[in-house]
Length: 171
Image (cartoon, rainbow, N blue to C red; front, side):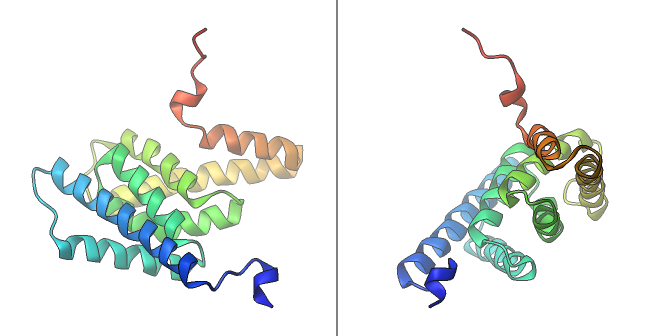
């Protein structure tokens, strides 16, 4: 019955989702620790996985999407602690704007690179990034009200575009 509503309770699908969470959490944790000159422990990876699962539960979003977004954020900033702090907020913002959570976290990573003078891992840095992301979402919502859905969607896609996607293509 629920399968027709887009819900898949299969063991294979659950296993695949868990594999995405485990592998993305592992890569993000290992990358962040290596950037600090350290080595991630299995407990570090498990802590990251628990944070992803908790954020997925809190936002009712895919843990795989959250984990992939966190991994992308960390690949841009090397700041796992700020990524963890942002997961729930960016998940809620993604739902509110109809944006993919992985894209939201990726854009947050781009924004995070503008705050390099702030302490790595700090709540203040996470809040500064979240404030900018909320501002972007607010502007998109205002444009949706003023310009209509189609133009607002184009604006949101432009805001979420990666820097390399905006550069002119070489022929």
